[in-house]
Image (tube, rainbow, N blue to C red; front, side, top):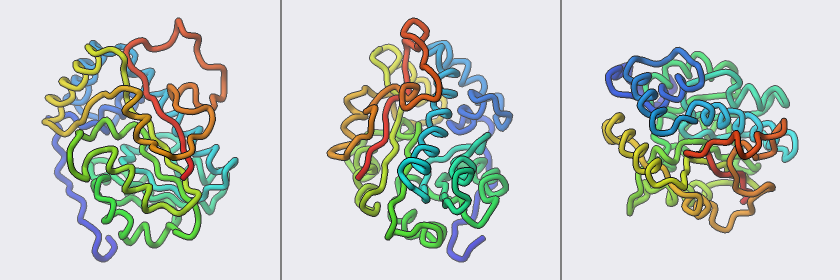
Length: 274
């Protein structure tokens, strides 16, 4: 452990569902418990497309990182709320194109940190930081960020499928305030990647929000509408194809026709340049 870095808690609450572990189960992972799987089953009753949605979201993350490295020359990434390691993590995708790419993962879930130390920190170009993703000052002033991120060069800040975990508030913990704060710390020419769960169906929005609020013991935000996510981007320059269902963001293969798409909810967002 580096000097001044927070000690990782080894206390893992297996009885309260964790968003990171639920996402792991939805992706077919094994780092989850009965409470997580039960919560996922309840979630699937409200929004049956959730498992497909999670996989679409992961594929979006992989495409975004590859495109930012290969087409826009980005070589450094700050991944907020990174979640449990899985196949093709951010640094693996980026370093496949350029081994010198640097990635700092940010999370404060004990199981994410425990696995991240062995899976994500596999070379000198990567680090995992034990911080709440809302604590921008602590993140940007941390030793791993100061060591790996060159603030004279553009970078990418990732908020992929995490903002729905944050409550609306009147303080700096609000998702919109967080995005503005991080944008203010990024070098000119940097990129912001944002997507979160949205739905046009009030019953899905309210049902999922209520379920997750109860299941996680109040450590969740809410499903939002497209207009709310669009507001996060403010006056940033949104890259083509704009703000979309992530399955439509520069797909590697033709996306599914409308009759085969999710009708309950989607991951929605895009990529913008500062």
